[in-house]
Image (cartoon, rainbow, N blue to C red; front, side):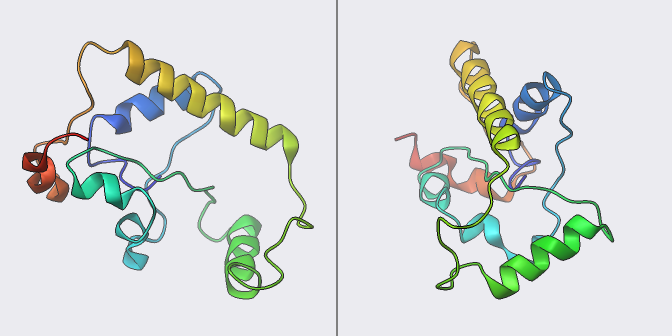
Amino acid sequence: MQGLAESTLGEMVRAAAGEFGVAVQPDQEPEQNRFTRSDQYSFIRHGVPSLAFKFGYEKGSPEEKIRKDWVKNVYHKPSDDLNQPVDQVAAAQFDRIILSLLRLVADAKERPHWNEDSFFKRFASAGHL
């Protein structure tokens, strides 16, 4: 999860994923700066706390190698098309976790906000969209 420690959304997504027995990990590759290079950054620049969901892996696991090989050889290349295999059970669980997070955010008494120590809190003065 990119942005996990930046706002109150971090604890909310942990709770949402926990409903399904799914662990939430911090960004495994923070040196790539993907949190500021992904689509949600437009919201962040306007002061809106955001997260970026990524599929995790354990360091040194076969899944780490699969992911790194996919990024190197398929991601944003002509082979990055609809012919790739999709784990539909995992995709459905992913959607249920996001739906649970949306419910938690909608039902909360307060809007999500930046944590006091977040670098991105400086954008809060931009106001919410």
